[in-house]
Length: 347
Image (cartoon, rainbow, N blue to C red; front, top):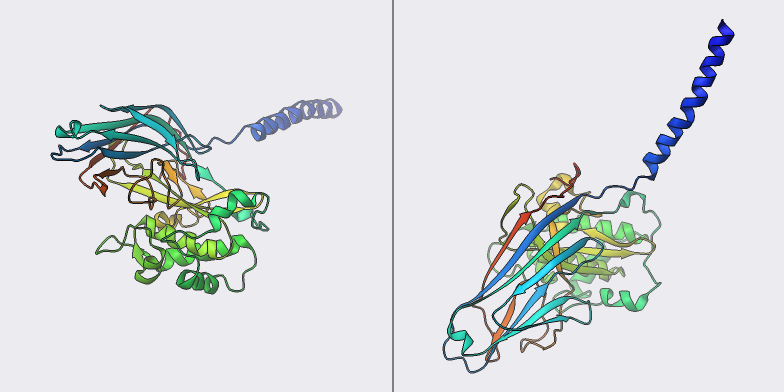
């Protein structure tokens, strides 16, 4: 009897083991589900009536594009005048260009951009990146992200701070983490007074306050000063506790580049606002956002009289050769079916 039971045991074990192994294999073979947010987005620009204009009002509007982190669908521009759908040459940013004649400006005008977006969580586990080095495989493509911008120098105070903060560190990842921790620890999110919001790295280093543009300008300048490519990105952040409504203003973030890894996401200002998520935002961008443009000092064509744009998220308008600052804007979103949020990205 014992021998029969023993035989049955081994037969059963021999039957179950392959099933268990197959189940594990299927589980391992399943691709990781990325946290996703699907929504409709409206971007409205209202031009008040203008009388006595000598020439046309020129208007440039940023447009979102699809990339590895977001899919843009059904983008439409509702406009009373024709528009040109263009690409900025250096970073590939998409934008629309429109002109309103003095006769058309006699009455108020409105332009609406609307689209559907699917935004994915962008998460890289930096804990396992131990020996990454600066990427030299495509120096031409990355060189632009090592250069200074008008308000983001890599020498002077910014360069000296980078040297001090990274002293004794050899690995690029360790250097960037030290800079990130320094920025989050020493700059506070504070939009009082003047000087903030221009993305002025020197202002952030001295005033130790500002909004997301100031946080990330300081971070990017210091990272570039340490010899590591870094780039600026700007768009809108969606509230995680509402499924629809208006959005008061833009949000920006940053990425740095490591060999064999690619672009690593960072959000220093969100880390300051949410201290328990400091580690998450070094290597993570949640899906509650939509990207509109990359880079600083953007050169558009037709070129604005004001010169290159510091960054491009709000409409830029000019009338009779001067910046027209009387535009009214409204940004709104509405969630769509298909949103999938993981526990970590639902904050």
